[in-house]
Image 1 (cartoon, rainbow, N blue to C red):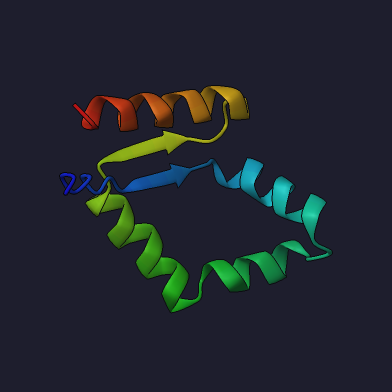
Image 2: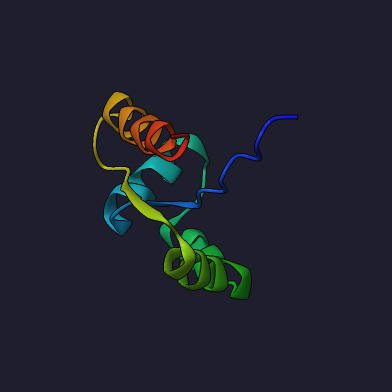
Length: 80
């Protein structure tokens, strides 16, 4: 039987202005609708609790290839 793999918690972070632009590009939501979603208790808790529990905070403003490489590198380091 193989050894269990370690659990690694990643929090993907992004500046609000970039996140809002990306949400608007994917969905037809206004800034006030996005703000309303952001203020929902679940979103507030996720942002605070998962961020503080994360093993790594990933900056998602970088190109996706760079973000993926960074995550894969951390996963590979934790497998040894």
